[in-house]
Length: 92
Image 1 (spheres, rainbow, N blue to C red):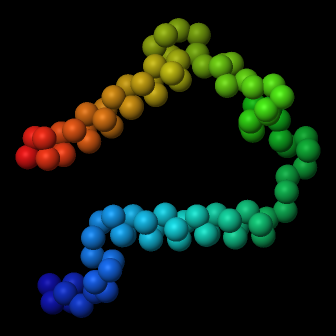
Image 2 (cartoon, one colour):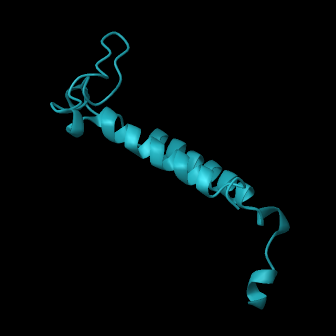
C-alpha cells in the first residue's frame, strides 16, 4: 500500500476527483464534437434533438402508466434521493 501514499495531495478528496473527471470529460466532448463533421440534415430530426419551435418532449412516453418514461424516471429519482439520505450523516 505504500505506492498509494505518494499521490498528489489536491487529488485526495473525492470532490476534487469528481471535478477533475468532469472537467476532463467535458474537454474531451468539446474537442471530439468540434473535430467531427456535422451530420447530414436528413440524419437530424425533431425526435433526435430539441426543436424549440416544436417542443415534443411529451410525445411517445409510453401508452400505459407503467411503461412511461415519466414513471420510471420518478422511480429512479426517488431511489437516488433515498440513497443520498441513507449514506448521509443522518443515518451514520
